[in-house]
Amino acid sequence: MNTPATGPRHRPLDHVPRPAGPSPAAGKDSARWPDVFCPPPASAARTAVAGLVVRRALAALPLRVRWEDGPVTGREGPLLRIHAPRAFLGRLGRDGLIGFGESYMAGEWDADDLVGVLTVLASHVTELVPKPAQRLRGVWARRHPTAQRNTLTGARENIHRHYDLSNDLFAAFLDDTMSYSSAVFDGFPGDREGLAAAQHRKIDRLLDLAGVGAGTRLLEIGTGWGELALRAARRGADVVTLTLSDQQRDLARRRIADAGCADRVTVELCDYRHATGSHDAVVSVEMIEAVGEEYWPVYFATLARLLAPGGRIALQAITMPHRRMLTTRRTHTWIHKYVFPGGIIPSTEAIAQHAGAAGLRVATDDGFGAHYAETLRLWRERFTARAPQVAALGFDATFRRMWEFYLAYSEAGFRARYLDVRQFTLTTAHPAAPHGGSR
Image 1 (cartoon, helix red, strand yellow):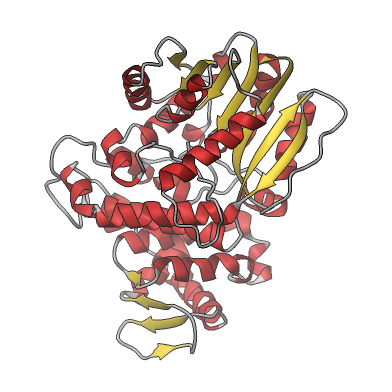
Image 2: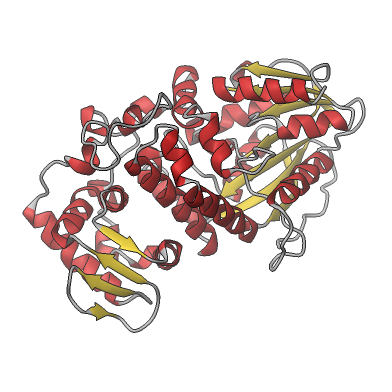
């Protein structure tokens, strides 16, 4: 995570409140959230079709469902409460899963166990829509807007919309390392160590994979808030780290200076495509998801160009099954619209294919998706507990509900194994090294 349809109704991230004092409204702010509180009229026909499909799908799932004030249906599973059925179905009929997320933001449905409900849905995602309707996906699914392409200008704007919201917002739910990517827990499951220690374990594993030690010339693509660069500098490495976020750059520089490592770490506001030099090691943590499929060939070619002979690349990436990636790669989703514009999650096959085309080879590959679910649970609980602090930063009630949905939605993806997170070592060396085992 270290990651609109055209026209005025699909610019919601432009309406996300910036931290400039308390929000004037903590609810139905139609000016900031036009598609949430002033949606276009829903077609009666689409609403009716959505009703048939959704009611049938929910009845077949291990869920209990209450439609408005009616009886609870279903005998097992978490409870999904639909408070405004017509509005809920109208959004689904008009905008599919984007409408599903917006309906939650509007308070039209709820759940005591939001992650539980979303995990059930993610586990049965291929069964929710009848197969004949799935073949018509291209008719109803929205396409990625041109404005979100990761051109040099577009990538900077996409990053700005998420990572420049507020350093204080991220500090409200991250641990003291300010690491915004999956941790690796010791003795998982049932581990009770602190999140910061688990984040350091993740960072150390990546630095070990890349062979980072005293004198290593390390390039990091995607600075975050500087913890990996700090950890590498303390090993004696000379680090250049790149970001497109002004706020991340500023805080990372302060943290590095305060730690006495400014002589070993250079933080640059620079697109990876403009990076120069020859580096013994390259590390990039959950940044490939923000590259965009169109630019994967450029990304891997850039990694190969920047790597010194005999060097090693360590990547941490969120992944999804290849067939699912191919099915959804052109679909504009709720996450694209409200959280990560321009992003796409690769498959392990896509990473190996594009790395190979650039002259790189996947030497090790280790998956640990359950650890991301746990990381997200801790972030979500911390975010929920600190809602008043987030509100004081100027983020209204709708934003907070959106962010809770995003964290729960992501956690559910890993719990359902719809998503995974993996650490890869890429090299140009031969012969192949043995693959690491999945957790």
